[in-house]
Image (tube, rainbow, N blue to C red; front, side, top):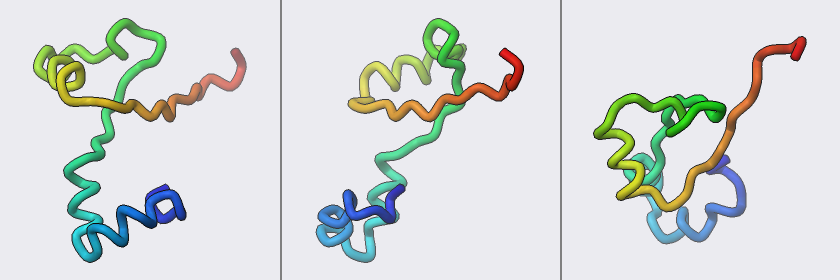
Length: 67
């Protein structure tokens, strides 16, 4: 995704530090969209998400093929 044209301005702005910049901003978190609080049990992680996160990109999918 980060190789798309959408990120060109940030790539130009950060140059060789682009990957480092993104690693500070993007974090993958496993969760369950069907559960309360995404199924996240760790209190500190939930607190961090509520305080620090502006955008959540949902890439949820089901792997049950006979629903």
